[in-house]
Image 1 (cartoon, rainbow, N blue to C red):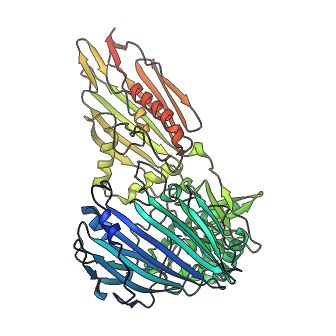
Image 2: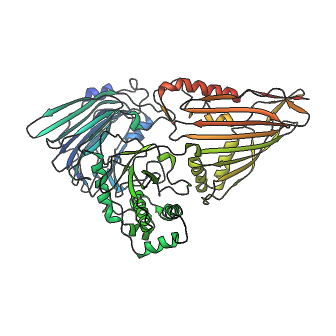
Image 3: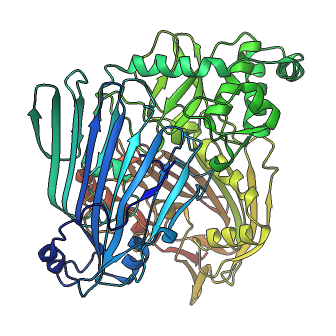
Length: 640
């Protein structure tokens, strides 16, 4: 769960909170010439935390940023953060800017807004919004311009810890702009013993001791910006990260959330009646589980966060309420499914996990983004995510290979959900076509998919038909820029009994070029293009070298066949030899043969391990170059 802040009672002391000594030499030293690629430079960023024995905390934040570009004006001209009224209060000490002449301009109270939080994409990855009653504070800086420095300082009081007597925090030291000085300091009573770990780098750290407290300090200076690369991992996997907590073990978190959720799991006559309606005629346990999963997945709508009750924190809404109003966030849907499963005698548990980053096992925290359901069977757990609609899978592959915390009355250690049935997560293409003597190809391609790819194709139901047509037009242009889409057909996306199927009819003038009496096919198909255009800006293989790993997020399997009928009177001069490569990360195989007047190509392209480390990049980039060259080999058709 991202760090959330609060503004129950905003007290504005703009310009009154002790005049901060403005480090003018630092400001003047930050120039566009010195930081030519930066939109802005963080001059300092400090966080000071003081805890009491109950886990209540007071945060003091102070930050100064100099703006260096037109985009930087937009990026730093406003500052916003989320807050949870049930748990926190904020006092804004000051917000101001220092213009190019050194004049200090305070932000007026009218330029500080308190508004409901609206997620950009309620269906997006990592935006299941585990915490519900979030609002946003927005500070709008006046007279913003290149060369202006913005500064703000505010205090946050955690008046009610999320987990009694417990504290946890995650701090990222690197970002997408340079930072001259970043510090994090926490003072706590001796009895609140902290554990911490630093990931992806090193920090300068030390401790101070007094009779009643310990002060932990971490800092880093001259922090380089993280320059984005295509398909690089999430910030949490590349930034130097501090994780700190006084929770002794994961089982404490597991038991805590179980106890928090139990009051929400009761059912009423309406739920019992619906369970009976959905399952009474079904003969097997598995069919009954599927019926209840399908109901909660498709009939209980995932709703944007701002509509959820403001008096809630982490706990799910009552199952009866979620059932009645037919909407909820992830934990609400999970609780309803657990309650309904219990009615058919199937025990299950709410499970917590993170979708945008891997949970650090060595430091127990209560920071989770998402909630799903687990059913124990044969000594292991089977996971179900009822927030993912219109999928044939209970547990989508993009949520697998993750740390998971099963919540029960005894308490569980942090577990791990590995990938399941990778070979069932694939795109399958079948192309048949006829090439005429003028070099025009008339073809049909049938696309079917399973797993993640099937779910992705079902997402086309949200797109207007004209835009869907544009998607398919771009798809066939992978075969040739001359390709023309004649028609397309999509099977019923809401029918989850069979994989979705797409059929495209198209033609490609000059698919084969005439040279004298012969025909030259210069692009034998898009089979090789699944690896990505090496010259494209967005290609993960386009850089000469990389600083960060490639992260495809999920394993991807692709299988294809291409059967082209050769014009009468022609034969293939020499089929291509094929291509074969296999490693821990990639499996690539192309074959070609001629049979019965047909040119038949088969392809297999599999990303087996989606996280490709930097040290493997050079080797695999060469493989992808070889794949691209294979696809560019000419096929010559000569007169018999």
